Image (cartoon, rainbow, N blue to C red; front, side):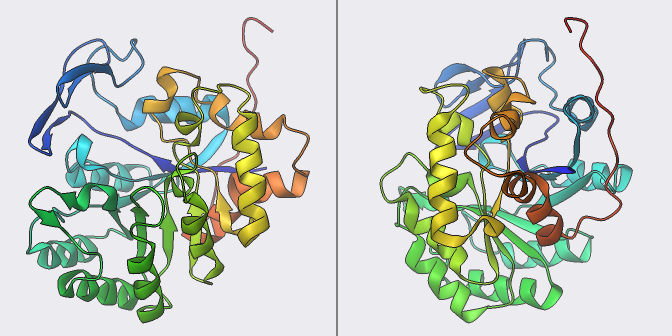
Length: 305
């Protein structure tokens, strides 16, 4: 089985503002996060750098062949670094570019990103419900960008607000641009009321769902995340297992569990068939994102074994 992580993050330093509140890298894996100190990274990442090399070490250990690197406003825009690592490790990472969607004028930047080699663009749409006014996903500028992306065969990676708040906008986008590939993140914000409405978007041919953050959303339950398995089964009943992809939301989720644990709860579960596990953990993402030449990674025994 070749495993692909459809939702992870990388950054050199957090230094940004969201909703008027600062987010800054501190030390020992901690960050100032919108008014409080949070453990953003595992404490052994003392310099606060969430690098590709550390992630690759985790991926090799956990036998994860490739990963999709998304972005979020809380980490700051990381386009320069992500393009650098895409060039350095072309068979391990597919990276998403991100624009400042909270302000008008992003269409020009999006075109520059696509011209510069980005094959995907990320929208943290849950961050677009601004106090000064909502940024609509169906605005003229957004729709022009989606048209451009469809023409360029670029992929849209998008995280939505809880429930069905932005589902109507997504339906309009999907109808207008039926050949635009769309990955809905955070498993539709499973554990929040109305999450199934986001999952149902994958009934459209060009839409898939990725599970980035599912272990965070079921953190109160914790490993082996039986509730997450039930949610995966429910989503498969709604749209089919061939529309679902595993994502870790690395590195934030590995402050509570190891990277391998973010997927081996699926492998060890007996409610899913081997075929379903293979589809969810890699095969669907390989086809959706177009990964080729995936590396073979041998299992290395722990000293404790």
